[in-house]
Each structure stands twice: as structure tokens, then as C-alpha cells.
Amino acid sequence: MILNEDQRALQETARRFSRERLLPHYQQREADGTLDRALLREMGEMGLIGMDFPEAYGGLGLDGVTIGVIAEEIAYGDFNVSAVPVGASLMGAIILRHASEAVRETWIPRMIRGEVVVGICVTEPRGGSDAANLQLRARRDGDHYVLNGEKTSISFAAEGDAFLVFARTGQPDEGARGVTALFVPGDAPGLRRTRFDDVGSHIVGRGSVFFDDVRVPIENRLGDEGRGFSQVMQGFDYSRALIALQCVGAAQASLDEAWAYTREREAFGRPIAQFQGVSFPLAEGDSMIAAIRQLSLHALALRDAGLPHTAEAAMVKWMGPKTAFDVIHQCLLTMGHYGWTKETPHQQRLRDVMGLEIGDGTAGVMKLIIARERVGRCAVQYL
Ligand SMILES: Cc1cc2nc3c(=O)[nH]c(=O)nc-3n(C[C@H](O)[C@H](O)[C@H](O)COP(=O)(O)OP(=O)(O)OC[C@H]3O[C@@H](n4cnc5c(N)ncnc54)[C@H](O)[C@@H]3O)c2cc1C
Image (cartoon, rainbow, N blue to C red; front, side, top):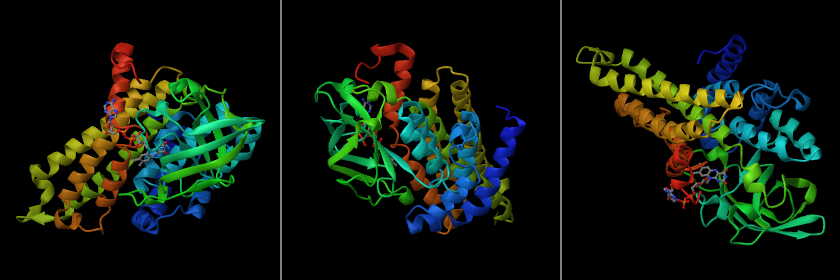
């Protein structure tokens, strides 16, 4: 895909910011383990969050391809920081389409300014792949819903300022039909959160969110009652392509560092770049990452054109994190024993991209989606 002049200018802005401000402190930020709110506000001021939102709310109304290009650039410098703009694009699209004007006007401009982070609560302790079978209860009480239950494995659980919560208003065995989506501020009385001790991506603060008689006004409902699943759970094709580009960014950073190392490091009296046993695995990695980048941007271009892109988004969602993991692993090995120290960022990137082999749907579920797109319900009746 050839980017136009505007897209290239924004890419350059994001690239400079990412390499100068994010990359040098990627591992320190992760060791600190919390969201750097000042940094997020700086990104907001620079227009690096929510640029796809309409101008009326403070965005630029940009296309998905441009948002994907920016996501890759930010992830090049810090994979975990890039979760904030990617999350904002997913949540913002849902809020814009389904929330009341009051919720939109209060929250979207603050998301764009980097002042607030919104999480999404689908997964429950009993499982995430079978998402439609969720059981967190939302009971109607006058002009409120009352939430009781637990969501788990939620990105930004620990520090999120608000959550999009999928809850059951219908019968427990109704599947997708009895699910309602609600917008719940993080300071709602009765809402409690925890933080997990994860393998990577600590600043994302994955954890559980507990709801103990949490009252949510009816105006905070997203879409119609009982139609939260079919109406509101639409934005995932978008975030899947963006997630793939986050992984592409992280892998490209490791590739660039590994290539540079092959020029400088010598063995047997010559740069290791001269050994095809060293250069070919990197050349293969560069090829695969370039291919995934292009398919991800193609999925976003289809979205921008209003065309179906579910299969393409599912393809890159499983290939992106897996290939990035394999490529970063190879980059770590290229650096020999230096790669095995925590001073090089490859080990951090490995741990970070691995999380997205699970988050937002596993490879198994992505392949079911692709099969369903190709041969319909005969491939999978329960998804
Ligand atoms: C980094 C990270 C961030 C996350 N962020 C969020 C978030 O913000 N919000 C949220 O709601 N959730 C989030 N999750 C949860 C995530 O969406 C779930 O973990 C995921 O959907 C899988 O659910 P599960 O872990 O319960 O696995 P299970 O559903 O229990 O599945 C276990 C294993 O069985 C496989 N499997 C299950 N069914 C099938 C099938 N039919 N065919 C083939 N294989 C199958 C799965 O692929 C998996 O390998 C996050 C997870 C991670 C790791």
C-alpha cells in the first residue's frame, strides 16, 4: 500500500516522537509498572490519540489506514504505550456509535486529550472464547441497572477511568440474545479492581473488575437492551488489524536493532552479516513482517471503503502476534549472549507481544472466524 502525502507526514510525526521519547525508556516504563499519565497527555496534545474521532469532539476524522500506520510507529517505541491509542480507537468507535450524547460529549474529548483511559469488560472467570455465554448480571431497577458479578483479564482494570461492560439482562441460557452493554465510570460505588502480576505489559494493568450492586443509569446503556452482543460488539475487526500493526511495530524495532548489530559484530574476522546463517533468518523475518503489515493495512483500507474485512482482520490477528514473537526471538538469538541480558529490549518485546496471542481472541478463535467467513455456519455453529 502506498501512503499519501498526509499519511506520510503523520507517520513521520509519530515516528520521531516514538523513537525520541518512547524507545529510550521502554523498559524503564515497564519496570515502573503504571501508566505515565503525563506522557499520555503529551500524546493527546500531539494528536496521537483518537485521531479517527470526528472534529466536533476534538479529533481529526482520520481514516483507519492512517490510524494503523500511527499504531505501528508508536508500538515501535513502546508496545505497551501503543495499547492506549489502539484501545481508544476501539472504545471510541463503540461510544460514538452507541452511547448517549451526554456520554459522548463528556468522555470522547477527554480520551482524545489523553486524560482518561477506557477499558472493555467481556471476559469472565468461566472463560473468554465463548464470550456470548457471559453471566455478569444486570438487573433493572427503575431507571437504573444494578450490576453484580466479576469480569476478569481486563486490560486497564487497575487504572481505567471507565469501562464498557457487557452484562446479562436476559436469561442465563439465552446466549448472545440476552446481553446488554453499559458504560460504567470507574469511580461508581461498588466497583472494585485488582491488578495481575503478568508475564509482560504491566503498564496495561490487566486485572479483575468486581461489581457489587453497582448502579448504572439507563442513559449509560450502549445500544438496545438485550442487543449488546449483536449491535455493539462490532468494532473488533478494527482493533484486530490495529493489534497486528502493534506487533509489526515491535518486531520491526527488534529487526532494525538486530540488522545494525550484524554490521558491527565480528566473528571469524568478518562482520556476522556476511554469514547467511545469520542474515537469512532476519531476511525471512523482515519478509513476513512486511507481508503482515500490508495485509493489516489492506484490512483497514477495506474498512475505510465500507467493505467486509472480517476474515482479513482475523488473519492478521493470529499471524501478527505469533510471527512477531518468532521474529523477535530470532533477533534476540542474533545478538548472542547480549540478547540474553535484560539490557536489550528483545526479551521485553517477546513477553509483551505474547499477551496478544491471547488477548482480543486466541489464534484458535481467529481461525474459526476465518472458516465461518469462508463456508458459513457449517464450519462453526456455536460462534
Ligand atoms: C494481554 C491480554 C489482554 C486482555 N484484555 C482483555 C480485555 O481488555 N477485555 C476482556 O474482556 N478480555 C481481555 N482479555 C481476555 C481474552 O480476551 C481471553 O483470555 C481470550 O478470549 C481467551 O479466553 P480464555 O482465556 O478464557 O480461554 P478459554 O476460552 O478458556 O480457552 C482456553 C484455550 O482453548 C482454546 N479454545 C477454546 N475454544 C476453542 C474452540 N472452539 N476452538 C479452538 N480452540 C478453542 C483457546 O484458544 C485457548 O487456547 C485479555 C487477555 C490477555 C492475555
